[in-house]
Length: 77
Image (cartoon, rainbow, N blue to C red; front, side, top):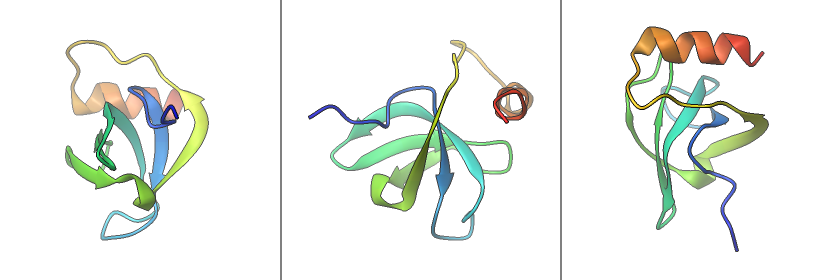
């Protein structure tokens, strides 16, 4: 079964200190974990059971900054 947590998918974190913050999946889910990063969230590994996927998907450039991620998240609202 294909995972919905693919590169560029916009999600919400549902648990932890970053609960409620919007993040973008940087690297697709493997073994139940995905690499995510957001405007207010550091880049890191997140359990996919702690993520709520949205229908939004953004095109992620090869190189990006935190400001680029913030613009992508704002554009998707």
